[in-house]
Length: 353
Image 1 (cartoon, rainbow, N blue to C red):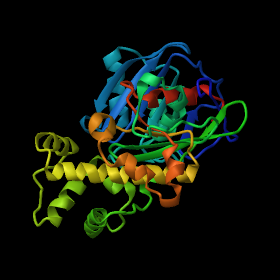
Image 2: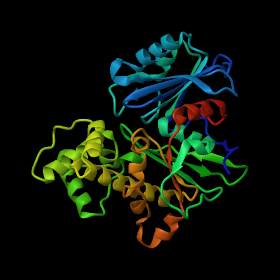
Image 3: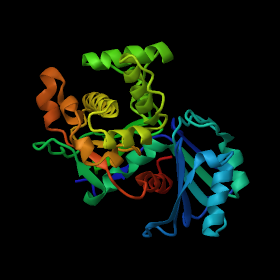
Image 4: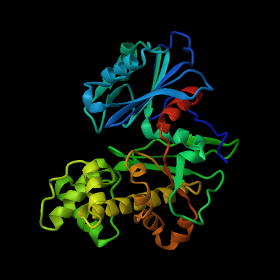
């Protein structure tokens, strides 16, 4: 139903987007274009030669290995042995309210205008990463997503679509239908920072433990890579230990695989349950009968373990609205190439900015 979606926006300036270019000069050629998906852990870059071309030369660079985004971007150009094209669009895991960027989950700080000039670009569009990912949702082929539960769920045509995804942080976005000509508006927000609620006693206990450390426990404090580690530590403290031997999400996952009855598996179940609650809340807030997509770097790696988690049960556990949510499909995005790169390309192509 979404194959030929068109997006629209009524404003030239938008929160979570900044279009840097020299307005005294003509609009630069649209292709070739340089695309980026900048997270708190990795920076992904790709190249698109023409409108009908696939995104190629995709490379993933660890953010920790570079002092700045400029350094990482310059390293990419060296890897593919090309000069910067006229136009580029980067999605970034951060609010974008203007020229100055200070990343929430990494130390990079920069001016978008300065970065454009330093890289030799005529135009640089910076957009929130989950807004970029939302722009790509209606273009995802069936092979790039996997349904999770909801045997009776069917996406409603021309209904809102939700997007949530844990990675270094917790991204939240979606698409709202305009109601005519299959046009959509992407949502820009910071839903990952809303206050996280508990449903079970185990969740109440975990949140109480994390409140001692953080005060405010947002969704991102638990439903993220760092959050999974903190959740594991909180469970250890609740059981009278410290559990500090684990310091990364990968180690939690490895312990869970090696020891099926371990605290690591308990942490993963809690993590997925919290995600189910947050995704269900998003579906109700947006009226997302078009489905909920799960992005980010963590859930796709869980594969069938995620299907066996409390996620879908908790997604539907909304009392009188359980039947409403049972009809809403949930999909994990499994595309091997970051769909946010395609979304960034969409942002450059559309006349919405």
